[in-house]
Image 1 (tube, rainbow, N blue to C red):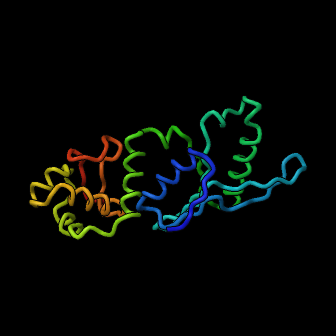
Image 2 (cartoon, one colour):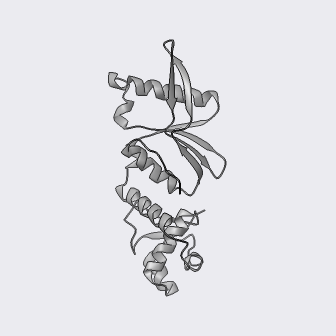
Length: 191
């Protein structure tokens, strides 16, 4: 596992979402640096994150607090200039650009906590031996972890760990935003 360099709590929350998104193939924080001219002065700007998805799509992302996007607040002049420069760079180069705020990243504290739990589990454990067996009992219908445990006669702890692994690797979905992962959490196949 490589060291990730982040500069704010909001960038950390963004990293949690990106690292736990099975659609993401790779990412690089604080990349790339671009140069632009504003009022005759050369400036540089660095995107908070570059993301490449498994489908080949690439996203250039800036992470900001919603309050920093208020164009009527003179304290935000530098931020607004930076976002305009980044957006122009992406349009010019036909790149996808997005600004992500705390409203998206913190819309559900349960989801954020669950994603952090998944990352922690994945980084500290090997693939559970029961993962393939558990996956064979998951379909397109939402089922609770408790139900799968009962159907398979497998201890809940093994179901739990297997589902975290299967989610991280893109095999299944979990209702992460509805509840802290528990016996009542529901899983279904990732389509």
